[in-house]
Picture: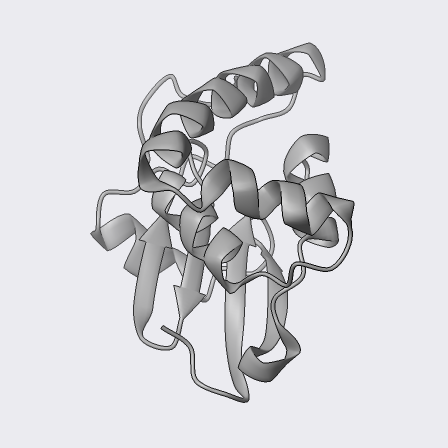
Length: 137
């Protein structure tokens, strides 16, 4: 995992209000470094590596820690483990997602809710995998 002073990157869709809310509230322990929020719609420096793994950025956020990439439920689990325990949100985040089994169950439920929200908001997909007919939620 991360060493002191290293940057961590959270790559996600900032047009998703739920994702953006989560990303702006989560805090990593100061001893690890800083968490940089990366909008997958405008900052494409990480998308080639994500796409090469076959990961659909519309279906999961990506956490980059040093040279490691974590996707979807793994990303949220690692982020929970690296997060500070200060504040109600970060304590709740840790208790909900630090266990792999809970993260595997909860993440798809949250993603389904997110997809409904983005459909209601008429958002387009990032579609980094270039799937035909996959422009809207």
